[in-house]
Length: 594
Image (cartoon, rainbow, N blue to C red; front, side):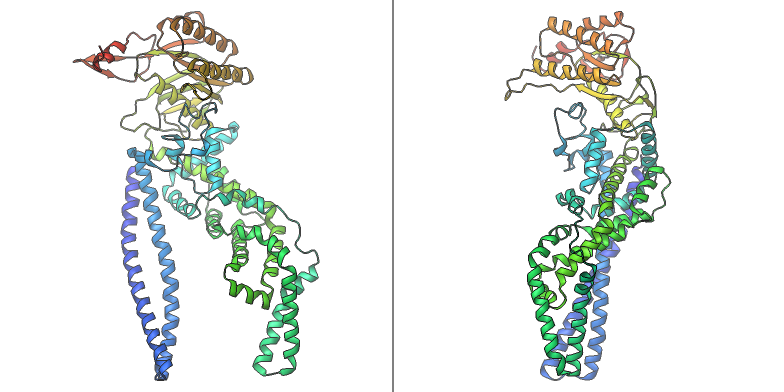
């Protein structure tokens, strides 16, 4: 955990920001004085009282004002950068303190109650892993991070490569914060979803290369001739120039509709393309060590093209296409230079060179952002490690904890599930469900190539399915018991299709009477044992624990509490064997019910 490093970064950039703000205000005041002076000079010129010296000085000050204006804009960018660094480090501190539950982005669009484990393990939604770790700032990054949490499907080799990449990013928080600020300047925008799609149509705008050159360079020749005729008073050129301008006007009007339609796609792409280019440039220039990050870098800067240069060029084309918002300038430039036609030709050439690469660039950026989000875990959670991949349906760990629980409140447990089915008994609020979620969340993180909250962990590549948060569905007329049956049926069907699986069932068949619950639970456990899957089931029914005596793979574990001075105390530590305590009556007494 790097709390001190985050605090130092905040302190450093608060001091830098204070100096930047002072300079920013001073430059603003100087600009104001310059403007007032130039207004006075204009007044002197209008009244005819401006001396040569005043004009010379005003000209020099005008040039100086341009310089101040440029510097002021750059300083504004530096101020925003400093604010971005402070904000990112403060959010890391919020993750450590628990204030992260107030983060606005909870990944609500990814919530799916039919997902095998997302809702039960708090992967997306309120107070979820997504809300805790997510720092993505592009549409592709956001989608990739969610998919890595919800549908991790990496080979052993790919997981190891991702682990190395995440470790590299985690170890360099200065760079990680820097690149996160750069990404934040892009921002999540719905338009990014279809950027690559809008570039896929490579049907040429014009096929004749000679005609393209004529349309691009012809207007330049006309402008040169017009300027020459005007400056030299060469009246013989006036008529030819006028004819040429009328011809250009005709070409523009005739091509207006097809050109406008063709430019729809590039005009739509004005969304923060310069910011994309800046981020890509940063990644192209960075010296990465891990194989996965190097691969991302290579995908952005190939021998065929540099993504940053290509996206910057596309940004310029997009800006040209959006000139129509300034109607007067748009009309003048189209009359004099066939502006839209030339822009369409440039866009055509760009797509021929880069369109087949563009989608890969955006996907690579999304992949990087996902890795960056996972890299925050070891820096804000105490007791993390890079897990190792194990065979034989194994999940073993030392000091395994839940990453979303505050560091100072987290209780960790050792786990040794080596092809077993755990039957976990215990009293209300003793920690059974939290323990199962702890196992599930860490397996999901491990399968995504992430750090986990444990001193050491070995895991097999197990698909995860849970049955924990079961509720009535009044709109569908479904009872809790039927809903649970449906969920458990899904677990069995997944087990048949995917024996490399981890199931987690909380308070099995809580929606029915005790007799049916015991019979049903025994039946389910036998079936899951036959299918060879591993998993955990919690229960209040101590009679169910007896089934472990008949099956080699089943083991009993429990959580318990102790009573001191009429108070109940939970240690949240898992113990071998069946629970020996109950607390329902005591809790009802504490609440004044009995």
